[in-house]
Length: 117
Image (cartoon, rainbow, N blue to C red; front, side, top):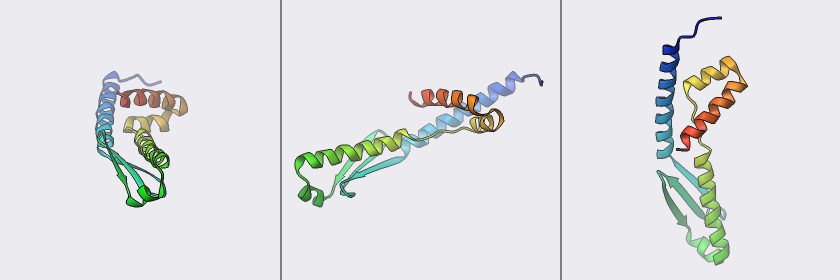
């Protein structure tokens, strides 16, 4: 068994944190779009902002309750896409190829907690 180089491990972890932080910032800057009512209702989530577009045909074809439901569906779809973003660092990719599922699950849990801040 090879001796563990703690300095190299700490450097790898530091680079991985920096990499994850950069990916998180890029993720936050992306736009995520959800649609409903045959694409007549659109919600776009970007940078913590929500934009809703309702086509005039949706206003004519749908009653208030159905239009409200379509807006909610579009917002939920955009929000789901934003939450499903995956951040994968080079350290995690190396760990996945070297150690398998156990480390991968633990690392994903840590990264998920990190991105929820």
